[in-house]
Length: 219
Image (cartoon, rainbow, N blue to C red; front, side, top):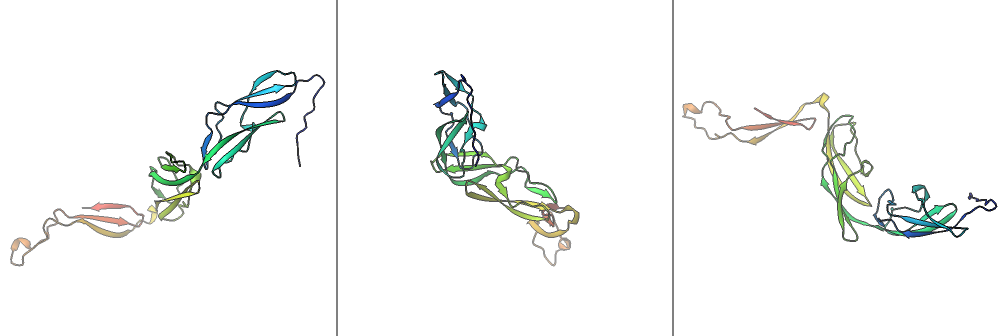
C-alpha cells in the first residue's frame, strides 16, 4: 500500500481545499472514447492564509476517466494532496454501420492494412448519431500472408460491422475463369448462307478472372 505524505514547513501556505468553478465544456462522451477534454475547466484553490487562486489542471491530475460502459462517471481531480470531483455522462452506442469503405481494398501479399478514407456511422442510445474516421485498433481479422478475400470486423462500443478486402498474389497469377459480359451482335446463322461460314464476334465482350482476384476484358 502506498500513499503520499505532505510535510508542511513552519509558516508555509498550503492548499486547504479546491472547487470546480466551471466544468469542462465537454461533459458527454461515447463508449470507447480514449481521452478526456479539459477545455473550459476552471478549478480554484483555497489556501491556509485564506487566499484563493485558479489552479492549472492537466491530464496528470485526472483520476477515474473510463468509457468502457455507459452511465454517469465521477472524475476526480488530485492536486497537492487535495481532491475535488465532477461528473461526466458516457452515452452508449446502439448501432454502427460502414459509411465509406477505405480508399484501399486490394492488397498484395505482405502489405499492411490501410484504413485511410474509411468512415463509420455511429448511432447512440440518446438518439443522436455521428460520422467519424475509423481507427486502426478498431478493425480486426486482417492478414495478408495468403491470397483471398478477407472478412474484417469493425468493433466500436460493443457494436460490430463487417467488410471485406482482397489480398492478391501477383507472383502466381493464373487464369481462373472467363465470363461472357455481352453476347455478339449476331447470334443467328443459316446453313445455306455463304456469308455465315465465319463467326462474327462483333459486340462480344469477354472478361478474364485471375487467381489474384484481378480481371480484364479480352479483345
